[in-house]
Length: 107
Length: 455
Image (spheres, each protein chain N blue to C red):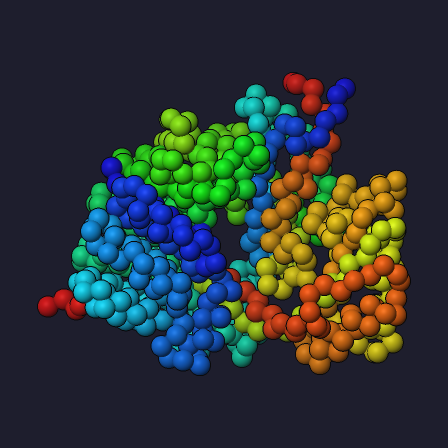
């Protein structure tokens, strides 16, 4: 089975709402969307952000955009103005998620 | 069809973008977003020192540059530049118009500032509970620095209907700024949920300026021309379909990919994008590349608005300070990590206690912070440099102040190959935290006023 970094299949954007970060990932080719749905589960995202995401991870599907949206609760050291982080709004979490290794076999 | 341009994604965005949007081709409306949550508390402080302050000065400077163009082209402007003092912002704009010898009708949308009504609300049982924690506002009442209701598009549409050429608002949603001209021009009703949702999604797409026209887009970024990046324009149709484009000849790029990324920015549940005007469903959007730098949106559905407005409350929540030291090869990462421990021990010896201490290693893994971003054992000793970024947070200002004096000594009394960054000691910052709440719509009423006043 081929293992690839998610960045080869998807692009992404992230943002914040309080102490919650959102990471949206989008299939580069529409036909790869089912691979994202199968591989990039909320549980795997929670594991990937171990030590960063201290709360739960929620996943939402947008099949019309070939995209998944993740909410990473308690991930920003209190968020926006409170955080001591260099990236208090999780702007770079987009490519952090794209580091994930997935099995890209179709079907 | 009407053209609605965005010229400002946040206060601090390009000063040239709004000017280029006005002069670079035909537009009917220019919308500008100046307000973030933290901005409101800064503006409140400014107004408490000077009753004529408390709004976005950048906006007034911009109007001074382009008012003759706006007047000649009949372009109307909608901006939430009023901050906590829309009337003072209006007066400044009218002063400029007078100086330029131009007659201009300016409207304000106010009533969003509920700072002076909080005790009355609490006494009446409107608790303004924190949406995330459920705590009542009374727990932080004494520390509140600003409190503003997010109004939607309808009061802005009313101002347009009364003939305003420039609409200056307090806290109106970013999406409402773009939706308002559609309501006004197309006569959309308060229960046209699908159309209101379409206009809301158009507003969301352009509210961060160039972030939908190639800015931050991860697809083929090396081939995007950023220096003269074009800001977005909505071409809206009465049936709720619209296209996103930009002025011809500008840099940047409008593609399905660039637009999708912005659609997901700050997204929660995509089926429930809640604004004062409607609940928009992002899973209903159909996108299509309709030409070069042109993406067409259709199929958008929405549901009825809720009975509540969102309230943005800011409050003082302690203090923080962050300092930095740069370590050079060899073993830069190892040294920076050692200094983290040294600092922790010194703070401990001083008997200082903090709510949080955080060390990050810029150049190694600070941004991503995840296990997958750790430098490998082979790579770590060879890094040319690593910057230790060390911060503390506490309600005790004196403790944070004392910490700021512990960075500089490490230039002489710690591990080798170190240099300081910046000048002097880190600054103690007051933390302004954010308290999101809901308020029943019946409790507040937008106030629309036109100037010169109507007969």
